[in-house]
Structure formats: C-alpha cells, structure tokens
Image 1 (tube, rainbow, N blue to C red):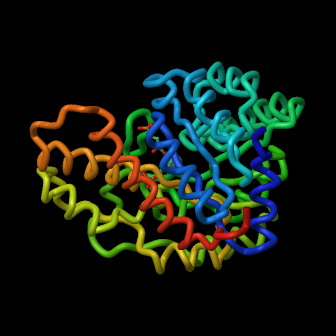
Image 2 (tube, rainbow, N blue to C red):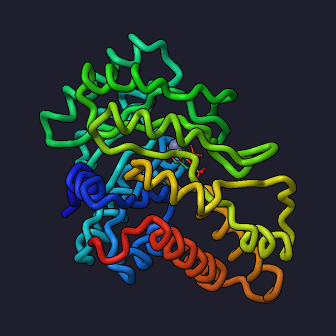
Length: 304
Ligand code: G3H
Ligand code: 13P
Ligand code: ZN
C-alpha cells in the first residue's frame, strides 16, 4: 500500500526536514531509489513524469511502485510529476496514485487557478493530494521545458493556495531543470522562499534541485561522456532551502547522471561483456549511492 504523500510531507513540515521525490523511468532506477530509502529508513516519493509514462507506460511503472511498496516498511508514495495533460492526470487519479501534480505554471494566473481547482476537486474525491506550481522553473528535459525563470510572488502564492485548495506548492526561486542550471554564480532567492513560507501554510516543493555532483560528472566523462558547463544546486543552498521551509525536493538529473556513469563504465572497461544485467546492475548501484547521499542531505534518515 502506498502512503499518502500529504501524510509524508506534513510530517516533514512539522519535523523541518525534506523528503526526496525521485523520478523513475525503469525497474533499475526504481530499485536503486527504494534500496537507498530502505537502508536509511527514510520515507520516499517515487515520481513519474508524462515523459516517463510515454516511455514505459503508466501500468508498468505503477506495478514497479506497487511491488516496491508491498515489500518495504518505509512510507512510500507514488506521484505524477508535472502533469499538464488533464487526461493523463485523470488516468493517474483513477489508477491510484498517491498524489498528482498539476503544472499550470505556464498559464496565466487565473487559468492556473481555474484548472488547479478542477484537478483538486477530482483528486479530493479519491483522497489523492495535489501539488501545484506558481512561477516558473527554468531549463529543459523531455516534456518539461521553460526558457525563463519567473520567481514566485509570495502574495500571489498565498492567494493561489487559498483559492485552489492545493496540498503542496512548487515554488520558483531560481532553480532550473536539467544539468545546466546556472551560467555564472549559482544563486537562489532564499529571501523569496522565506517570504512565501511566512504567508503559505502548506508544504513547499523545490524542483530542479539536482546537485550535478562533479565527482559523478568526472566519472561519466572519464568513460566517454561530454558534459561541458554542467552546474547544479550546491548542498549548502539546499540545506538553507530546507531550513527556509522546503519539504519536498525533486531529483531526476542526478539519477540520470549516475545511471549514465554506471553504464559507461561497464561498456568501456568490459568491452566483451554484453550481459544487460551487468551493464544495468552497476547503474542500479550508482543510483542507490547518489540517492543515499541525497536522503542524508535532506535530513529524512530514520524518519520512515
Ligand atoms: O521535472 C522534470 C523531470 O525531470 C522529468 O523530465 O519530462 O524528461 O521525464 P522528463
Ligand atoms: P532536476 O532536473 O534538477 O533533477 O529536477 C527534477 C525535477 O524537478 C522533477 O520534477
Ligand atoms: Zn520538476
């Protein structure tokens, strides 16, 4: 059984720590994430983007998450990330996700309010919680892309949450999706976050939060990757963001980099080995390692 995302995040809010949301696309990523959470007795949120659903199918990914939940004692939630297509959101609600995100960040304020209210109405009837977004997170991945960052306006955030009844709010304070987050100096508007925290009472979410570990990037490049200019959110900025009220931290890019480095290493160092279990096995271990690091950073060890 999945645990309610709302229960997990409200506990995190009371305890002033953050819970990791990790994007999954296949079995090895899901297993790596769950093994790390189990080892550290941490709650965890497994998330699927619309791109992941196009790649693997909702039923397959839900089976992976359900199987994990049936085998572990830690609180485990299953979440739809960046839902923009209302039909996909409806399917997720009917399919028993623990929570869905409606991402109306690209819409005008009133339209974002209207559609978020609609999703909240449908989800509420089934006891599913809803994450919404105000402001824009920059960067690009597969189906999620935004050129500019528009910081969340704290006063508008208060009005948005009151009018929509959403359960968690994703805020834009300078992070971007992907591996190229900052061109010059890394900079997050912690002052805006503090102001939002003062005005908004529900758990806050940070997207685009990957650290883009130089160690992992170096490892991937050693075995053939070419990743010039990648840059992530520093650990100190993340710690500060948690202190300032972030309770859910989304990580995808760090998993992609760890997976990539693992695969490249096997292919490069064992050119005669073509067993997918060996190739993907190391990638799965790399996922577990980076997720353990993230969970420790988020402060959710033994909170499960
Ligand atoms: O926030 C975006 C996630 O990393 C999902 O990316 O659309 O490429 O699956 P994706
Ligand atoms: P990263 O690209 O920084 O990992 O962010 C992922 C994310 O926000 C998923 O919703
Ligand atoms: Zn995101």
